Length: 148
Image 1 (cartoon, helix red, strand yellow):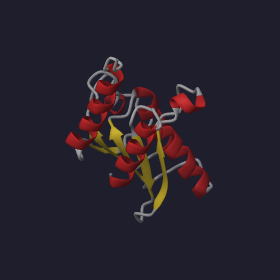
Image 2 (image 1 turned 60 degrees about the vertical axis):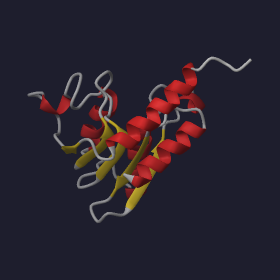
Image 3 (image 1 turned 180 degrees about the vertical axis):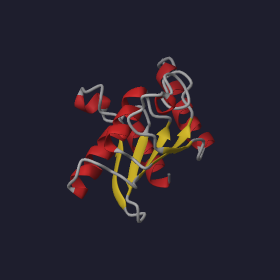
Image 4 (image 1 turned 45 degrees about the vertical axis):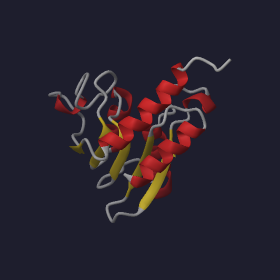
């Protein structure tokens, strides 16, 4: 999660929503890391998870990430959770829960659905406070009125 947290802080410094993700191989090797790039790419799908999973798949030279761990600083949204299923991620570990936009423990709960394509192991709440504080500070600064 430390790698994902670093990527989240870097994304926030670039003006992106501070979410970071990292993909580790079955042996624990870091395969890829990314922070959100939605604003920079003008691409609503440029979430940290998608960028990291795509890069990991390219590095491995295959479209499936069986046995890999996806660490992400915020509960994946439905789009990213569905992508993780298609990539066949072995485990998803996330930090902060997202009651408003999450797709795993909140919202559609994609992996609990009868027709789920793939059900990775999921561990939520890892370094939750740290990730939640990072997001809270980012959004508070955005809402702060400009100084005179």
